[in-house]
Length: 416
Image 1 (cartoon, one colour):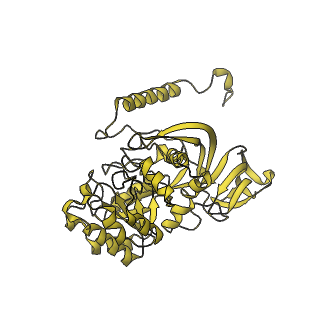
Image 2: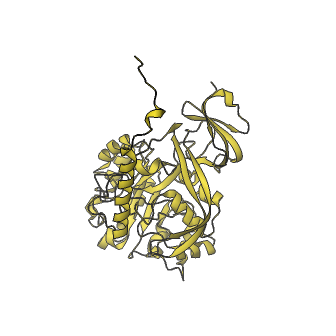
Image 3: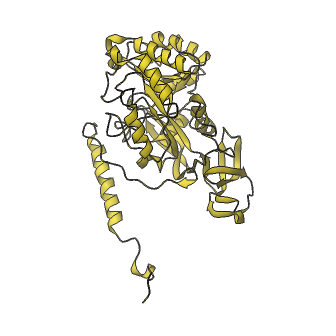
């Protein structure tokens, strides 16, 4: 057989691979074998009709936290991955040098790809914040040795630079993170938030290719008067990442940045224990929020596939459907309409469409369904969120308590 799997007749949108239009995607041995019109159905062991669907590379979420059970923020990606199209989950600083070995063990158990940004603070994000207040935790020599010993896993450095995380340490944790980035030849992702330090103080330190996450934070930015340091950083090649999270995305700020000609380079969720039940939910919902402020579907798909893959120099083929690339593929229904969405400050905008995931393939294999765990006891939830979680659990229980089919739909497996 020429293909193990053929996704037939979908609308392919693959900015990194140069594919756009109604095409077939042939998969063999876990890799993309061929993309083109009219590929032979008879040459495939399995054919999936994708007509009327959107087919993209597996999505790459540049900012997530998937060190569940060991950190304040961590979650299991599986219950979201299988029904969202996200196949690559970049863990953005959950672990530092002290805890990376444990994260490696956790990553090995995940059914998705998890590149890692090493936190400049050795403890990582075991607690809610404060990891860089004690500069003894931010040992650049140790961080360099940790990166060099874990090149197969670590693709960059993460530093949270806001008042709560750094306290009196100010910009020093960022300076140390940048020293590690230079020594190891990897980018640094910088979380911005409640000042001090301000974006005007920290952005001039960043190099081309470094990443500002929470770029549209309403705490770090004034939508009415964008700091000139933003334009200077953007123009010299610093990358702007959405990093939505529970507090890092404001519609008025991203609209001001768009009006200034500074669209985000990458769109990520900052999905964690405090954002997965809202306001983020998942990456397709975050993508819809950028559609709501005027970005095109093509721009949004690029910012969630090839753009994050390039930002972190992920393995060749990541975020594309190029022949020879890993067969990470997402299939969506595109729903047209008027979909109201909220940012972290309850500002509302309306998206013209949303993506509903129908299938997520990792290495050519369909990701299996996975049920979400109950929220950790420290996660704040509204009464409405708790009621919705209870109703969802009840609905799943009722669905699984009913026999799958009636007796007439069965045949004896072992006739006597």
